[in-house]
Image 1 (cartoon, one colour):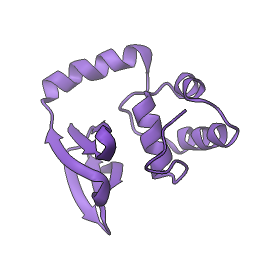
Image 2 (cartoon, one colour):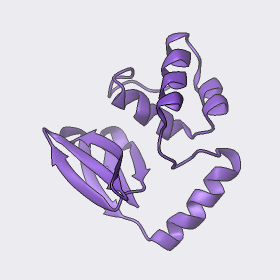
Image 3 (tube, one colour):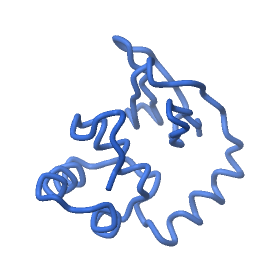
Image 4 (spheres, helix red, strand yellow):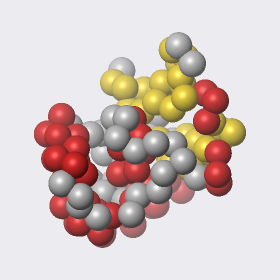
Length: 121
């Protein structure tokens, strides 16, 4: 697990076992599959997390957000984009997608639907 500290004191925890660099972005991988990417210019620091500690955090997060820290499926991304375009709010997105606010905002930024300086409302 890698904690990615972003500008504006934002951060996300990425379940990665490998990082690569691609055209100004850091790409995170787990078991050979891409699990996330962030623009290098937005990253302030990277921190390796204690995997035992993260296992407890993931289990706790999944009590309320069953898909927390799981890879996004194309269907999840489509639902997210559709709901976002229809004006769904933060609470609606969290409920429908079973994910945490930070994961949703990060995915929206990755899809180009939320600007880096915008917050999920």
